[in-house]
Structures are given as structure tokens and as C-alpha cells.
Length: 345
Image 1 (cartoon, rainbow, N blue to C red):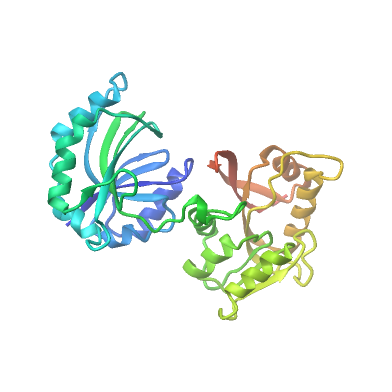
Image 2 (cartoon, rainbow, N blue to C red):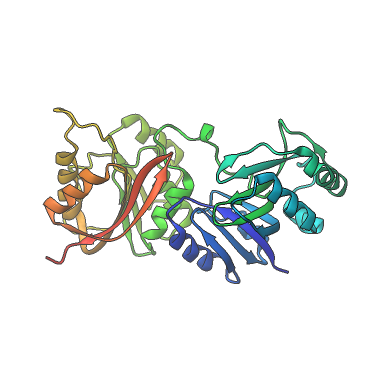
């Protein structure tokens, strides 16, 4: 039996998420696709919680079209009256022993909103009775949510992914695993590809490659000795296809010309240039070295926040053409994902 789901993802990547859903869920039916949110249908409920490219996923319990002129409470009340919750479906998605209490969130256009709790009092009682859980607004095990979007839709749903890393779990400057996975997926890796991340930092990108993709060899390098040692310790018992080393991305000694199939990386973004911090020079030198080691039919996937300076470096070096680019937000900052290929000129 198919259930309806709602998943959130990084804004700006709707086309990418659609393709990944289709490739990961053989029976998926995409009902509605918004920027940053998708509603879809599948019978593989266990697989939904394992999808690496989504921020969070929810079991959809009810939805309706809305009028943006209405107050949030008006639409909420209208949706509550229409709800016919399938509690058996919820029980399939939650571990009974771990879920003792719950709360209901209300979000309007990505912002938490206060509501008239009398409107959901009967709903809270129904959830408590049918799932044998208690209301706990401070430290809930289960999160239900009313969400209204500007596109004219309101949904009621229950969260089914609780294993995602929070911001407290992420080091400063470290990519979220969902974004690292998406970058790797864009590279279209296979068992014959030799791939490198020359600015690997905390190891987000190579970690996703090793866990979730096929490859021939993967090289991870950075100038930060402490981070490289930490990554080496993490993979000291790893197979022999991952090579971790301190290297300067502007002088990748040890790599022959035309050796690498794919470069996937997140170079420094610092957008405040000074006499000692010339990022145009830095990016141009980086592109020269990347051009040297990359095969003629190779591909680069670059995440970049310093967009204007980087594109100027691309234009002045003329080594690479932009095949695709996606405008996204990373920690509230505008950034681009570039898919680059060697210029035919």
C-alpha cells in the first residue's frame, strides 16, 4: 500500500531532487514539487527514511488548498475539520518503545507561528489516545506539524526522520551530509572513476563517496594537518581505495597530467579580499592545477559562495565551461553549485 510523504530539501535543487527520488524509489509518484519541498507517494516507507539527499521527511496526514488572504488559524481550523487520520500508517513509521510523548508545531511560510490551541485540542486528544502518547511541548519524541506554504497549500504531517544531524553535530565550516551527497550524485560516479576532493576539510564529501557511491580510487586532501589526521584515524581500517594526505590544492604533486576523472570540492569562500588574500589569484591558480590533473572528458562539481570572483576566474582562465549551475542557500548564504567540463576551445 502506498502512503503520501512530504520531504524538505535544499532550496534551488528541485530538478536534482526529482531525479534522485525517481532513481531511489522505483514506484514513486511525485504529486507536487515546490522549491525546497516535495509531496510524493510510495509503498517503500522504510526506504524514505534512508534517503541521504533530503533534509527531513514526514508522513502526510492531510492537506488542502489555501487562500493566502486567510489568517493561519482560519486555514488550520478548516484543515482540522477535514482530517481523517490513519493511525495504523503512523504506527508503521514509529518505534513504539521510543515514542512516549508528542507536540504539534505550526509553521507559516518557513516561520513558526502562534495558534489558537483550542482549535487543535480535540486533535491532541485523538493523537494521545490512538498512539498512547502524552502531550509534551518541551521535549517531544514525536513531532506533528501544520505547514502552510505561499504556493497555496497547507499540510498536516508527522516527522519520520529523527536521525538527521543537527547544527550542534556539525563542525564550523563542515558541509551537511545531505549537500555532500548531492554534490557526489551530480558527478555520476561509477566503479571506473578516479575522484578527488582537494579541499576535503572535515571530510564530508569523501565520506559520502565512500559510503554511498561506486568508485575506483578516491583521494582526499587538504592543507590542514589536524583535519587530515582526524580523517585518517576515521578511516584507518578502510579499504585500499581511499587515499588521505596533506596536499596543497594549488600544487597537487604526485598526480600525473590527465589522471583524475572527477573533482568534487568546496573551496574557500572568503569574500573579503585584501593585499594578502587575493581570491581571484587563488581561484585562477586552482583552476590551472585542476585543468592539469583532470582528463579531457572529466567533470568538476564545485560548491562556491564567492560567485562573482570565481566566475571571473573561470572567464579569464578559459579552461572550463559551465554546463549546469544551481543557485542555493548554505547556512543562509547564497551559493552556487557548478558542474564544469573542460573547454573545447
